[in-house]
Every structure is written in structure tokens, then in C-alpha cells.
Image (cartoon, rainbow, N blue to C red; front, side):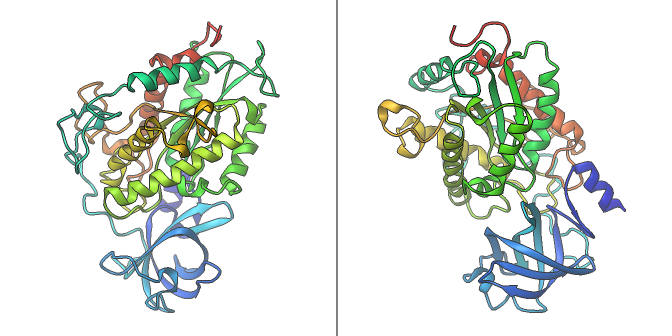
Length: 416
């Protein structure tokens, strides 16, 4: 009953006896490596699970199994610890580790720093050019700077000037729409859906702006890389339900994360950069008038009780955001937004409202902190109070930042 109650509170999907997003004890019943499927016994019954393409398969020490799902160690009867998330066609396995840690059939295996009220990392927006984290300097944009370089700012202003209300054909129209969408996973949809509620009720929000939450549970960056994948189908359906069309989507909020990351900073953030690049390219193809994508990393995760995305991965995801923006500034062809420089493959990239704070240690700039009450039972997904904090950060950013308020705030029509 408690598991079902937590599931309802979190808005997660429940397999009977198994709470998605947690680590769960199981036994292997059958493996079909060719079809990417596995049957395990968990929560009192057999479970048929699809296996994510990017699923992690680890030995008891947490080291990758060279043969993945086909590894001989993953045999019938083997005790394993798994992480399962909801996919488009049902439950999907995202990580499997040999051995049970706890053996009581309930979520197990908190990361090493789980339960920490703070982890001692300095927020990226409070690090100076001389501060270092694993060889990385401070500042959202690098060099201790939290504002984009002059040339990138100028380019952003040119893109912002192109954001005007458009009709269903994507043509400027006084009674047209500007659409803002979200793209990401469960944390993002929980936060962005609350943001939409308070933004739609805010009298300062432009009546020309339509906000559509396209983020979905279990659909992290890797799940959006295939342009034909279900997350895109669901996103298009939500856009249609909102009474707008893809040609009217001109702004996106993308929250970067992947399921069960492993490895050092350069490894997991390198994959996050690669996956997000493809997601941005897909978005630009599907939304031809997409001009700006505001990127964000995750909130604090020191209380995480599973390997879905604990610290330090939540903190380190900010560097993936910065690397993407820096790559675009340096002229990456894969992220080109300027037709004068060749084929356009991406919207222009900017930081959103940097969301991370070191737990109960308040940020100096705005006092942001996160207590245990700001998280749900798994310590990873936000509770109602956590969602509220993120939603307010987003609202403040879009209303007041000089590189967003032109299209967000009512009154003057952008470009006129």
C-alpha cells in the first residue's frame, strides 16, 4: 500500500509490487539478447522487460560486463539488482547489476552519498574563473561568466527578433501564436507542468504564448535521439491537443539527463552531449521555426536512493550544458543555427534558470536550497515543494532575463 501511495504521489507508473525508478531485487528467468529482452522474477511474479539500447550491465563491483546482456554471468537464476523505468510500450530495463543488495524485495542500493543534506560542491554559477572542479572552471558560460559572450549574445538577439506570432503555416500573423515546449524526462514534466500552471495564471505572460509540456516520464535524452521514437509521437500529440501546430513552436526548454549514468565526468557528460546534440537536431527538424533552446541541468540529488541519477551526476550535468553551448559558439557544424554558415541543424542555445543548489546550503545569489522535504520518496524526483521551487525559478527567468522576456512577457509584440 505504501508503494502504491508513493507512486500516486510521484505520478509514476507502477508495476504491481515494483516502484519504477528505484533499484529492485530480482532473479533472472530468461534472456534474449538478440531481441533485447529479459524476463526476471521481481515483486512476487515474472516480469517481461524490454531492454533500453543504452542499458548498463555491471558486475558485483559495478564494472561494465563486456558482453552486456549477452554476458554469461546473466544466466537463469542469477540474483540481480535492476532499475526499471516506464517506456513507450511498457516497462524498460535501464540498468542491471549482478548481486542483490538487501534481499528484502524492496528498493535497495542507495549511492554512496545518499542522504547527504549537502555534498560540498559549489554551484556552477558561483564558481569563479579560478575555481576548479575536475579541471573545469566556473561560470555557466565558462571563464567565471554567467552571461553569454558578446558575439553569442548578439546572435541570440537576432534570433529573438525573429520570434513573432505565426499562423498554422508558420507565417507572421497578429493573431498567431508563439509556442514554448519542454523536452525531457520525468523530473522535467513534473516541474514544467507546475511551471505551466503558474505561468498561464500570471498576468505578465503574453497572451500570444502557448506553453505545452512535452516532457515525459522515463524519456531522458537517450530516448529522444531517434526521430521516430515514441517520445516524439507523444510530443506531437500534445501539441495538437493544445490547439497549435509544430510550425508555431519557436522556443524549447530542454533539461539534460540520462538514466543511470556511469563513469567519470568526461564519459557520462560526453554521452549526454552526444545524445542531446541529436535531440536538438531532431527538434529543429520537427519544429522548423524553433529559434532558441534554453538548456538546464538537474536539481540536487544527494538524497537519491537509487542509481537513476544520483550525485555527482546531477551536479556534473551542468558541464554538458556548457560544453554544448561552447561547441556552438566555436562553430560546431552539428549545432549550427546560422544559415549563413551552412546547413541549419540546431536552434541557438542558451542557459535556462540554473537549478542546482548544494542541498540545504543556500546559494549566495538567490538563497535557493533544497531540503529533504523537496523530494519524493526516492530522493530523485521532486515533491510538490520541489516542483514549486523549480517552477518559480523558470518563471522568474523567463519573465526577467533580457534574452527571454521579449517573447514571454505581454505587451509589445516581438520584432515590432
